[in-house]
Length: 581
Image (cartoon, rainbow, N blue to C red; front, side):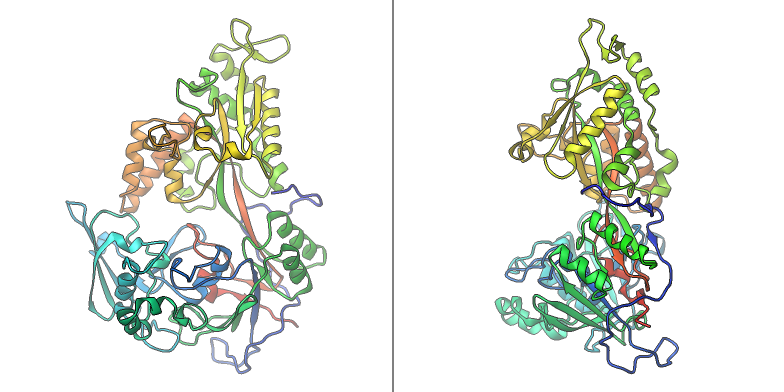
């Protein structure tokens, strides 16, 4: 991301969104007249026009044969049209969707057997239906599982393969048998576990699987279960969705959603500022452009909706292999703590992200629901050059006449710090190097070539510290600290634990989290993991990267993408808009 060139950043990440009701120009409504509010009274139809950076390939499934899903941006609209059994919200709280409630051990709907096998029971909402009015039944989920586990259907994701059998004792009950313990068996939010309409697709699937993959259902004839139904799909231009009167959660507040595919960022900005679109989903604009659009609206007296969400953890990996670490003193946690105290992470965020993201103390950001579990177990290392120097002195370093630290023999202490090329990485590297230099530690800065940055062996054999970004997902968070994922020559240098951190207790916690079902067990695991991590600092936390969405004054209810990310339209039925007045 580029540094902002104009204005100060007026809104911090927390709270994540600024929402102030006011009237503002918007897109001309295209919904047919005769709309009603939730009390049954007549009102003016409401239209919300949204820019998204890509067009989806299909709505219902992961990439399938010649019918690709499309880019992530194109899939932002999917939960407006089609629901799953469950969803996460923007903080990572799990919520039921098509399920009336979610499996739980205390209700007997999640059974964990001594041999590790499981059974989960889902009860569907009795009033859920397809957009053609056909009632949703358990058979629609069983059919979807059959399709997505069929090796003859080329799919990119097969979460259903973890399930050994699905029984449907009645139209509203799903009983799933699991061969192994899976901690997210109550959180089937994946595309591959979304229902498929038996009444529209099963006959073709049974008779001609090749034709099945080419059906118009996957694109312009799509029929779903969400709050909006597909009304028009104009390839290369837009998708129009109309509120579905039979939606199980009640009719959406907005009558029409129009998703415009706008690849060019400049075009998206022009459409936003002219009022041709009401907002832009994540990835439509880069951070700087989104802030500039927001500030333009603010200067004109408008009060836009601006949502920033953390998506990646920025960190400094430490080389912990004794035969590779240079200097070997970085194996001493006091050195790592001192180097972290020397970093002014708030200044780093201010310079690179206009203060929009919080500095990181661990791998769990403040906008994650797990933050409440771990915040009081997190050791912190505020910017304190004097404390850094005290720690350096404790390990035997001595201040030279020029203010830098040296070993007892007078040899200067040099700390290698590597970064990959591109973006703000060189600027980030320079800021951190200046921080260390100010504390008396001499940095040795290296910017890798493009080729080196793609070489797994190079990325695993850095001598001191190396910058890295980690997507904020369950697996990525665990893998960066998992001892068994240390890259070696035997693994062809594959493995996310680049610095080869080894702690048997940490591995035990990670293994337990991969099978922890009960929330108290999950909470204890995350707390201990954060406690050990922040005490030992196998990697140095820097800050969290944010992604933003921006909407004009008058738009409300948009809360951001789910965590883990699926689509920001998970609560599209709650969105609202004030049309032109």
